[in-house]
Length: 157
Image (tube, rainbow, N blue to C red):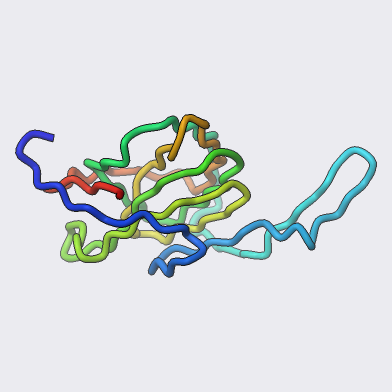
């Protein structure tokens, strides 16, 4: 963080926010189907990818001070299924190829939340708010994740 200005942004619960280019949905327990040995809880959010070559991964994020030095964007959407822990994740708009500091928002994301991040929406890997590990399944087309080094530090408060 050598000589970088620190900009502070309030961390907000995602269900109290509107983030342009991000759709979120809590899992609907009332839609759950229960049987002897399983429960199926569907989501209602539908999304369409540009590519049919879909991949995914499992994210484990540990506690870290919510200071973000980088963002990333993608050419297609990315879906996150948060399953455990409380995540802190930054989002921003891009303006003329750079992160618009006036658009930065930092979300607190609880388990059983789905996020769909639009193509071109700046964001970065979540950190855990506390000692509990955040776990999420991430699904997207095969795509690059170019990092954007920020000229300032995004600090969640």
